[in-house]
Length: 131
Image (cartoon, rainbow, N blue to C red):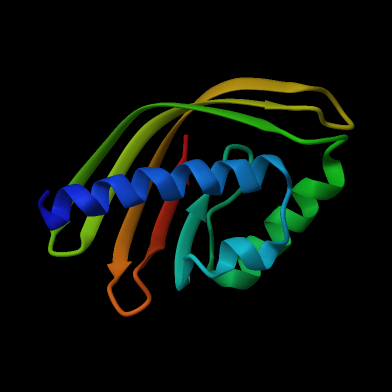
């Protein structure tokens, strides 16, 4: 198996764990270890923000608005290696969340940019755009 194929498989396995942890509303620190310091993030209904502090503020606020665990149904994952150890990932998500205001059930498109950290043998997300 080529190293690229191995990385694609590791990325897909990572994404599965990432969304499982997201659905369980895990600690912020689980997520920030996989986000670059200057990560760029955009979610529906929110302005774009950057960095770990931006993520922590957004995720803490989101968790405070939820009544329970969420569900991400991920499909159509396309992983493209744009240069060595750099990947574009595009996929669809059906996102279901019980919120205090109203339940959310929506289809979104996600576009990630990711680098592979060979020293730590783990992915680092540099851009995370949900539309």
